[in-house]
Length: 216
Image 1 (tube, rainbow, N blue to C red):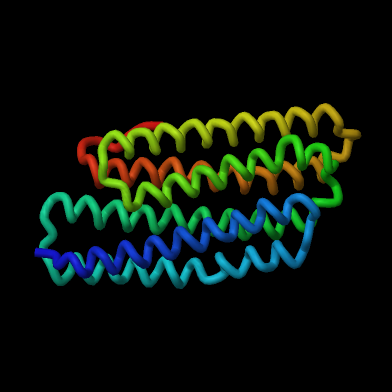
Image 2 (image 1 turned 120 degrees about the vertical axis):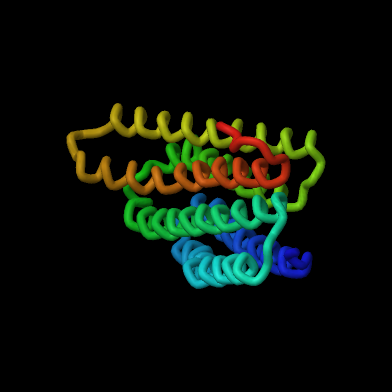
């Protein structure tokens, strides 16, 4: 039987990984308002070692599977944690890519567009990250379902806001399609972070409630 202390250790490492991603995106939200390079550099620090962190968690999970014979629920839990680590790594990569891309295009985006669309998009993304972080410690079925539905609502907001940004940029484009593509590619990285939270929420629901994976 898998000892609870190993499950707790893995969960603590996963929580720290998620918290660093959350912190990076909190800093990004404040940095968006003034295109502050130093704040973006600070945000990047929290996701710079994400590959090493993911490897550490994966190794802990694989070691636990090799040494013990987990029962059904613990096995679901380890599988969910393994896949969640992968999603957090992808979200961290998207975060680094957004930072790098935005610093090269921030002067090309009108401040009104940042205020009206980009900041709300990041706020919704951040809300998704906070909700999934909270879901790690929730066991109550009703509360889990409520959080899951909130993640879906916020993720759909990011889709709508990205579409609005794309429409606005296309409407105001003066034929500089290279710049347009560069801006949209950067903004898309932010929207993809929210996409990853849907997968994380789905995995946590699967582990905690069993049955089939939920669909967003």
